[in-house]
Length: 282
Image 1 (cartoon, rainbow, N blue to C red):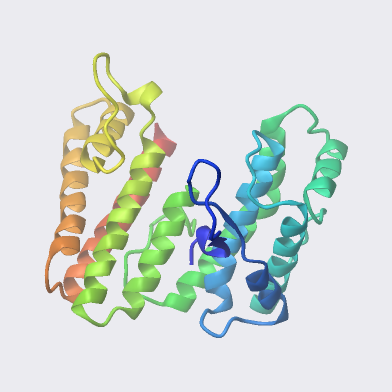
Image 2 (image 1 turned 135 degrees about the vertical axis):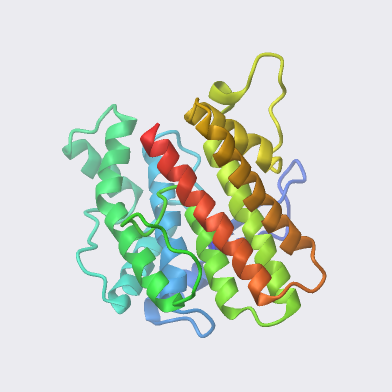
């Protein structure tokens, strides 16, 4: 599952004809009662924790939340129920919804500081994200690449979400169509990386036009070039290009095998972890 899966689209678009959506309250209520019939608790917990963390961070910084007060309350209750069933301990946020979250951050001295609110949320949610990522890896028990880092995730939310979906789909893939869909997941990881690492303010040269997100070789290559300004970056850019091309070959191949899908998946997972390490060392 992805965070978007906790929403359902409205039948009537907005005044500009654009699609709108609302949170699936029935889904949240069901999660409080027990596991879903077609999803394990760990499949649900990972994206639900990410959704709640992101929504609280939006509320505490620049706004633009999609969950209203009561929906946030229901989402937190659902998450508590799911993590309790998973045996995850010490997850006990000191707030129930937006208003009590605001009162709490004021008492913690975070009035007037967006970064202080982000740090407070990180102290509550980062350990949960790591624990859930560990449980997810154990549940999937796939043979896909694992990072050398002791951390179970990159810390880039969009990238981690796509990697989780990639691992899950690879585990259950059986047919050529399934393996081709793994290729689609690989490309989704690459595009999440493209959005995450490429910053026009830093990486766009004078006279250039910002490349589209799907121009992953160009955007990721520029990130590597700027993060590692030496002759060494040529080899890493060559490796990134090869990994990207592998993913696209599996996506477009008519009858890819499990081996094809596994190699492409390993490649993009390794690329994600290399780029994360590159940013940390920059």
